[in-house]
Image (cartoon, rainbow, N blue to C red; front, top):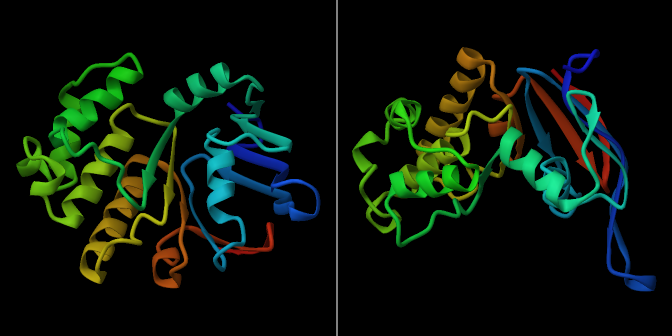
Length: 226
């Protein structure tokens, strides 16, 4: 455990895409630290680097320079070590759900666990019940509502008991009723189980559910409110 209580940190993160005159610097020496059990929202205009930040923190995309640390320990440089850490410690919730259309809800979760060397257990069925989607476990995504698909995606993200959940615009494809229901579940998850959550959003209403709101612009953190 990190001595300063931070479960995940980005230190002096720099990330650019392209080369030469076409290069775009997306992260510009960004620093962000998230405490264990904290719910943090990251806001900012389109193109400010929010999703890139989430992918760097989630060890999907390596930074050009800087350090991502989990519990005070810098993440390894090699993709093999990063992938192992990512599979073990981090759960992802994406705007587009990324469910496999040919599989049922329970099988979508099962294949995610299998990639991590785990199997379905009672915890997974409890998660389906807790998220209010036990009735769709045997249905394929096309047989679910949009809200049900997103909640199944959250079950998949939580099934391996990750230390950190990273959510990229999780309400972006939901109507206001389903968005509010999902946010209430995330808040309950954070409050009841002390789940650490970092959520990217463009919505002030969604961001307001977090313990702390961090504002980004032009690849940097402007300020944070709590």
